[in-house]
Image (cartoon, rainbow, N blue to C red; front, side, top):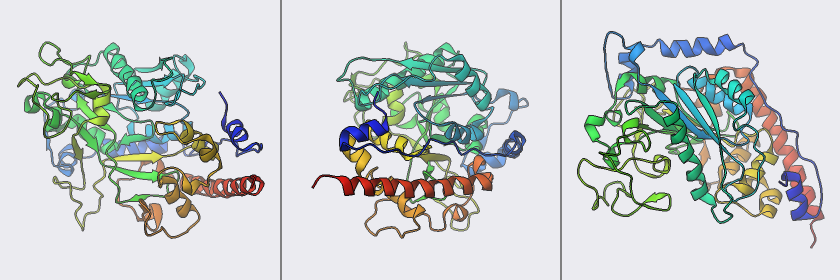
Amino acid sequence: MLDGPMLVKAATSMEFSLDIPTDILSEKPTSFFRDLQSQIDQDDPQKRCQRYGYQYQYHPSAKSRRRRLFLGSLIAEEPLELLQIVAAESYGIYAGMVFVESNRTQNFDPRPVRRANDQNHIQQLQTLFGTPQLQIRLYTNEKPRFTGIRREHAQRQEILRGWKEMGMTPFDVGIIADADETFTRDFLRAAQECDIPHLDYAQHQCFTSNVKLAASSLVFETSPECVTAQRGWYHPEMILGACIEMIGNRSVHPLAFRDGPRRAHGYGRACSKDFSKLVPGRHPLWNAADFRMLCGRQAYGGGNDNGHHHHHSSRSNYTGFHFHNWFTSFNATRLKYKTYGHAMKARKAFTWPLYQIGKNDLKLMYHCVRNMPDEKEQKWKRVLGGFQNILPPIPIYFADTQYLWKRHEWIKKQVQMDDEMVEKLQQSAPT
């Protein structure tokens, strides 16, 4: 596979070097984060449930009878830094985790397989996440026209096979996330402890519009200081095992007919309509694509149950985090935009300034790092004042203020280097 610099050379007929990938890791001892996790875990469960508008389902052995949660995610070149951030939210919570790695990108470019079925990587991630069961499964499909979102969803279907092998039951809960997404630790505990209608089979029997519960996630763009304001990010998602393909009862809930990765018309393809071919009580099971594509309810916090943030609340209404473009080099960032689902041409991905690629995400980051005001017509704008001006919950890893400073200062230097690289390319480009 051509790496980033070689792609640039092919696109621009000139060779240059970009930054060396570097993980910016917290230097705090493990006990620092364990103490923070323990404080959240020991919170009054009734108050926790009330924060999200739920009732606490009390029974004498509540801690031993918490719902079991299983996580599934695609994995590629995500650095250890990002995995540590996500693991800080969920350490010791998941009963099983399945990662899926592919030998090709979404646009069919070959990529080296670094983690799949490697026991050293599996053990490293098991230790990092504190989970008893963890798989890194390999996905291969050598059909060159099988690209984009279809390939992505086919990879996710491997997650369900892994969950089945791990012994997931209809009473358990499956969560599908990208590797840079997570529910907050507080909401993960709520999902285990609270009486949540979406996780109660008797209340929906897998009827399409009542099954999925999605996060309302706060988006950090490349740096902890670059926080996206007023953006609704609705991943990751969780669904009761009883409604998931390979886990639920197919004699009661058949598989949906499909048009590619999407459900066919009449089988719950849309949220509030399109149920013409569904038999009452026999609503189809959900596959991995449905997790991401079908409608559901977003979970909000902040001590209210209607999804609106109280003006005087001491907490935000977010129940998840999205650490977008959390790479260890802008070379990796550019390679992503060349190879992901809606890929750019190599010349654009590797020669345009950062603020011109990435659907406005990188423009927000660029203005943030350069301390420039957002443009009036900019799609996404940032929280003024950055990290210090957001309400809790905050990512557990970000409690290390030294890490926050190191990450942001490093990004500032990389932006400057990237700008200099682009300027040289433009000066040497043929006229």
